[in-house]
Length: 115
Length: 112
Image (cartoon, rainbow over all chains, first blue to last red; front, side, top):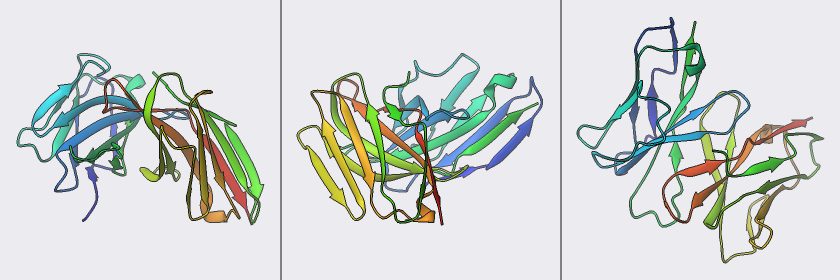
């Protein structure tokens, strides 16, 4: 069990550029979640997948945000035309559909800075 | 939207002292979870208490839940410098069953 991994750990980009983050969940986990955390706040839920199906995306912050999990394993989160307000930590978490209490296992996060 | 709200926002104590932080939430829940986040890192699950439980212990952690008041408390006994971190409560909305709703967290500083 290598835990949830995220890549890159840090990303600095200029306003208007597109960025893509990757998350590799724990191998046997079929649910995957994305959260955003801004400074001084708790994580804010964005979207989640069960296998390759994106079952909730209404909480994505705008249509500039999109996420995929094409083969039900790793997931990507893309932000198009980045804005300075997108600067935040983007966290990925995973668990198993059969987890009765919905305890989630978090990755180390990708810190995005938009200049 | 933020579901839970922790109190206090910041807490500074010395090693060996106990730290108590509180959390309030708004909607009905199946369980309430506490997570720890070291500076700039991911979250680590600490302890979970179900809605039909009133108190739970795990090592130096003690969690209570009062569903009538929609509140929970986390007690860390005999604190250590390594306990320095931010602590968040999180609830799973009973209707959706998937998203975790976090509060703003309590920032704990334990000085030697």
